[in-house]
Image (tube, rainbow, N blue to C red):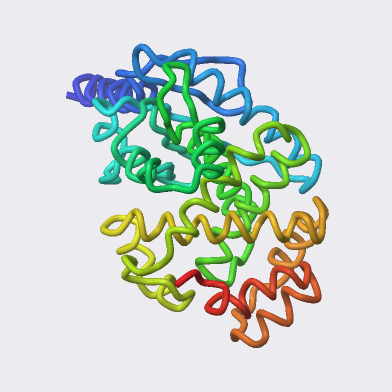
Length: 300
């Protein structure tokens, strides 16, 4: 009886180990990266390209912030998406936990929904979009922008695993965008048009069709926005992308470290007035200005 019990225990341990040793059995793995990288069949080239950018960004941010997170990257086809994440919108970069970053491997309706009717745009803007977002097949695709969002999501791994008190959900999104813009401006300046034109395009479309636009709205309806109103949530993100550019241009790369140290060193949740003063003094005035002037800067 004791022998049978022992065998049962061993079998159970082997089974559990097998389950956890093969969490991505439908995916292939690309090794020798800073992150653990898995990808859907047929998307190795894309996965490696994203992984190499993440490799470089981790090194850059580690030097800047004196911290390195543990990250797993999943580059998924639409067929594999529902197997590895419950997030309903294919194409929205996100985490399933504090470490597992999900990125779409394919162009998709969500990305395409942000492409405006080109024939209705001023000629100068139309030409910029066609030049910046034309893919290898000569089609307009937002993939160049959404690929860069892998670094936004990487920023989440830094501040979450680093134990920062982010104060507000919007600040938890703005800070990764500051990290993203800083990395691109400092290391891949040729990608700045792809990073900045898309937000300008979305913001320029106005707010008439949006359900929520204020920062308090965002705090209250954060989960609802991401899952039920992805385009509305995308508008918020574009506002934060534009703000990140302004903040970087004002304060340079050290604003990343200043905000890191400030948010890590203060665990008390501040009132709006206290937070604006805190950000102005310990981050940069441009960060506080974004908060104070949010509604006035909204495009109606």
